[in-house]
Image 1 (cartoon, helix red, strand yellow):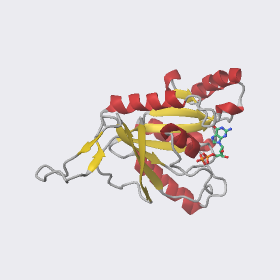
Image 2 (tube, rainbow, N blue to C red; image 1 turned 180 degrees about the horizontal axis):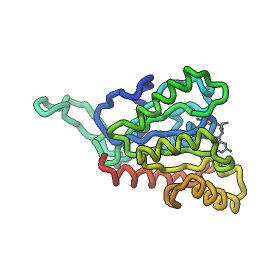
Image 3 (cartoon, rainbow, N blue to C red; image 1 turned 180 degrees about the vertical axis):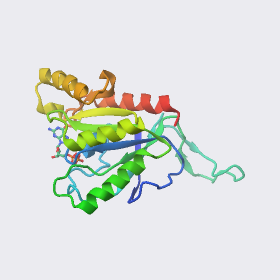
Image 4 (cartoon, helix red, strand yellow; image 1 turned 120 degrees about the vertical axis):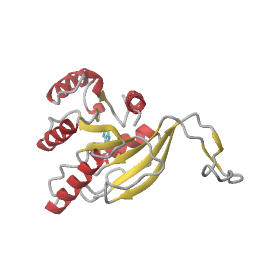
Length: 221
Ligand code: GDP
């Protein structure tokens, strides 16, 4: 069970998040289907679909607990007694923050917007607790110049990448695997780094959730 919680919207990437948990950035061109896939992943509408593209310059942070659903009383600090009747979810090993970045590649974005986005992006990629990125790409489209620039940034930092190929329902079944192989080759990704997804039909959503769990679990960030 995933328990999503909106932590806040931050204009700078150096926000300190408490408690410290592993972090995963969500990155993709505007309109790629990022909000829809995030909602599908957590099973709830936490992200707004189809916001005006290029408008947001902030990183939206969501805390996700992949837990047993148990609740218990947690002490506030070592020397403080538990606050009576304060029931909070017990911490689980699979809790993390999604850093949901604004969509990139919006043709009408101003220079100022682009520079602000770049600062935010690089700041997020350089965060100490970043376990990796979920990079969303439309399964039907050839990677753009912006996608290529993104790939270079990931490669330079050796950022771990999970590619979610979105809107698979727009292609016939047989075509999906062919596009997956072609995109993985172009983007120099291993087969297990790419997941074919659709927020509309739910294809690949459970698989992506498992891949995220494995990435978080393997980094010990
Ligand atoms: P964002 O800008 O990346 O957050 O993208 P949105 O989630 O707002 O989606 C952009 C548009 O694509 C909206 O019109 C969605 O309804 C549509 N969309 C998103 N995901 C899917 C999908 O899996 N299948 C189809 N057919 N359309 C989708």
